Amino acid sequence: MPSVFTHIINGDLPGRFVWKDGTAVAFMTIEPVTPGHVLVVPRKEIDHWEQIDTPTFTHVSGVAQKIGRAVKAAYDAPRMGLLIAGLEVPHLHLHVFPAHSLESFDLTKADHDASPESLDEAAEKIRASLRALGYGENVPDTA
Image 1 (cartoon, rainbow, N blue to C red):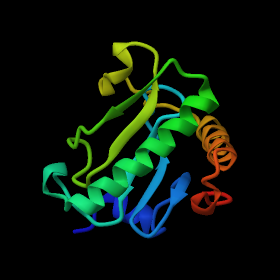
Image 2: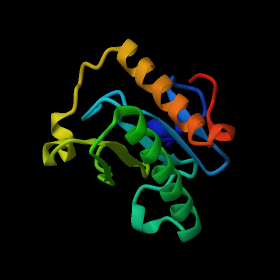
Image 3: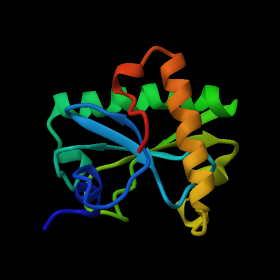
Image 4: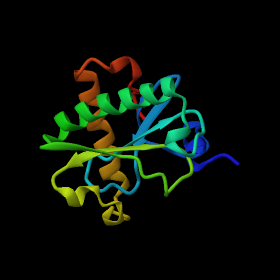
């Protein structure tokens, strides 16, 4: 059965995409731990991160690094967080977010009521930052 992320990737469910390529996508999480929290997801449906083939994991990690650079610049973040939790959705995803303290790494403290407007604004801010860093070819104009 396809994961919720597969439905988002396929356009069956809405997503605020900031990156799309043939191997991976990145979109805003609807429950951010900090503003600017992005999920980087391989198009392949793989549940456990240690089971992904190395070339795909290398690509997904590289996308996460580019997203991290853009989010750090867009939010003037002191540090960037990167987490692979894998408990929420059975489809590998890397959490990339501005980290202001160790509390930023606690997914149980995520904002469960983030407004659609704040998520739209964050997505556009990150898209603009990705373009400014020269990654525009993989940045969609909108979701």
